[in-house]
Length: 285
Image (cartoon, rainbow, N blue to C red):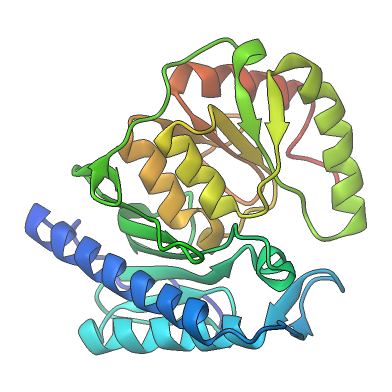
């Protein structure tokens, strides 16, 4: 795995190229989802662990990412790729593909039907606070449901336009979240959750950040917040939210990042950001 390095700068692509990139994202995400759906064993086994014993990798994670990389580089050999399993491969075009071969691997391991392939392409490096997302697609593997967006083109699910919910008071908002793998991080997140839960309609923990963001874009969740999201967790989903009329933010005037990602209708995001900032939800373990 090579160390991430900023690709060469390039002008933001025009609308025609954005549409082309979106179609490619849709195609490769669908092919990877088909691979996972049709070739997974009856019983999934853990192949390795990463940050902790519960942060698992399966053989299918590796196979899915290998397919994504091959398909992308066949179509666009000059682009960079940043993936969850095999890291960063430099390019010369100024565009970076950010891919998650199976988002929600623990759900996949246990046979819970909430895991997805996420593919996005951004102008710039693999830093969410610096890139400009151009196109992305998330495919829910078990049923093939496909969310797609292109910069300036809006967002769709299975070809039908989608939009975030209208802003509402936090007390009436259904909020998604997730938790890290390290026990110290989970303990800190649990403390934040005890302060958030009494102030919202309810909390949902789906187990896939990409699907959380898709559900916000489609209006199945009002808001989502999570600390610890990696670039591949959020790249496609964050674009879906913004193209569906929403806002994606961090805390303290920052953009979304591994420190904190908050997504939903703009005024609702503002209210949740204020609450999370007061709880120092982006600091500590």
